[in-house]
Image 1 (cartoon, rainbow, N blue to C red):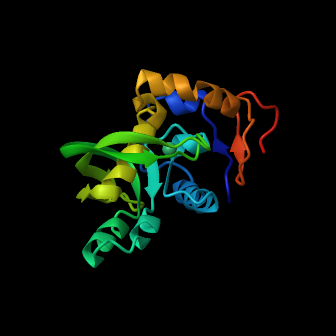
Image 2: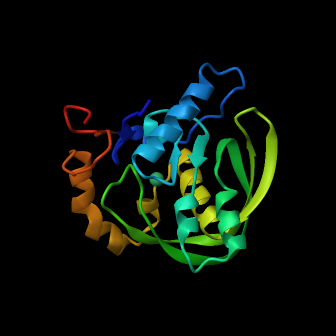
Image 3: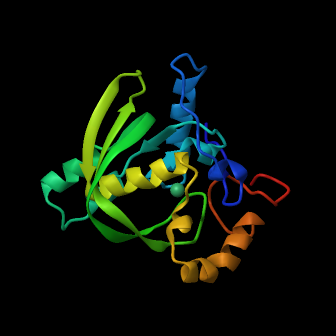
Length: 196
Ligand SMILES: [Zn+2]
């Protein structure tokens, strides 16, 4: 089922999410709904707070980035390897130089800004069968994972911008809070009367 995506300004996006217990009800259904919601909105990742659940869970599929023809086959496989559900993840190591990439967010439609993040991460997480893994990712895979990981920590990419940039996008953010954006997927806005 496609779930409404929570828009910028909703309190759940600013909260640190809680760990998931293995016996949680309907986890498989939630994960399936998150995949469907993400693909429906043409996203490359979505975190549980973005569908209104304050849980340490996100799904990532950066494979659209693998279509870039300038990449080697190895780089493409590396990007596709990140396609997974990540449960109770912890980034245990960050390495490499910080590099800028223009990011967007399904909760913050129509705003795209450069964000600096480290090149490589090592992440511990449980998969959908509650088996523990430790993996290292770099480049765009590490980029998408770090963006989603920030969501479960209550951090948005707009929080990482300079104070000047924050001032420049303030009126756009206010429009989102009030639901004054045109989008082609379901969203729930803090100050709009209805979910669209
Ligand atoms: Zn996001």
